[in-house]
Image 1 (spheres, rainbow, N blue to C red):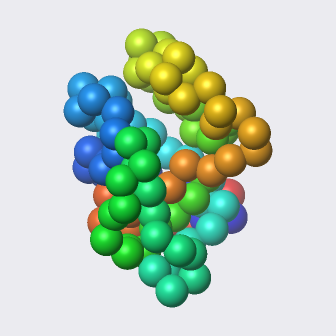
Image 2: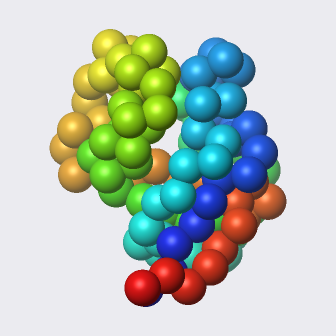
Length: 103
């Protein structure tokens, strides 16, 4: 099973101090998508990004891991993006992560 570690501050609409908390977290890789496979990626402010390759992870899984590192950062997502609990995925650019095989 492939996983990824977040190695740089991810893009997005959350404040930088919140996004910084993702660094170092290891998550299971759900999908690896090229710009052609997914449509355009959107950040949290729903502004169009440049097409890029990215990895996905279920929101619930990601926030469980984030909560263990920073309750404050996780709380930001719970408060500001309550619609995310509808079986959605977070995406991180491949330039923001290190992908590896895990057991």
